[in-house]
Length: 160
Image (cartoon, rainbow, N blue to C red; front, side, top):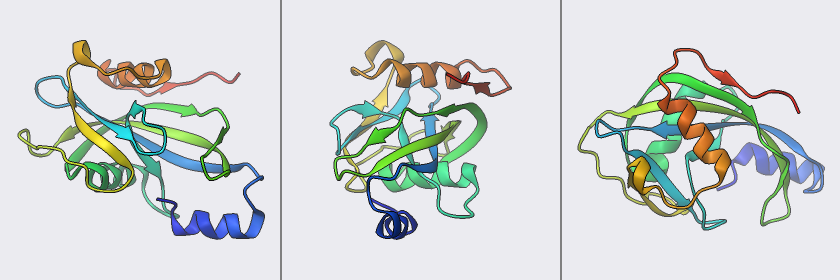
C-alpha cells in the first residue's frame, strides 16, 4: 500500500522523479532461531517484512508496526542491526524510489505467535529456520546475517 504522504508527493512530482524515502526492515527471530519472512504480493519474492516510515515516525516503532500490519505478530525491537542504501528501483506502477534502509533485529512478544497474511502486501508469511530458507536475494540473506550476528553495533554499508 502506498502511504498517503508518498501519494501526495507523487501527485506533485510525478512518477519519473526518484524519491529518497526512509524504510525499515525487520528481521524477526524467534526462540527457535527461525526468521519470520513474507512473500511479497508485488514481486512474488520471499523477503523481510518492511515498509516506509510515516513522517515523524520513530524508526523502531515503524518496524514493529509494519510486522504487525503484515503478519499480526507483535514484536519487540532489540537493536539496529544495519544501515544500508537500496539500489534505485522502479515499482510496478512506474514510481521510482531509493531507500535509506534501517534494519532492526526483533523478537516476537509471544513466542507461540502464529503469523498470518494480515494485509494485501503479502501472499504468504511464515517462520523459517536458516536451513529451510526459501529462495531469496543474496542481499536479503546478508541483512538476515547481520541481524543474527549478535553484534551490539550496527553494520553500515560502504558507499559505492
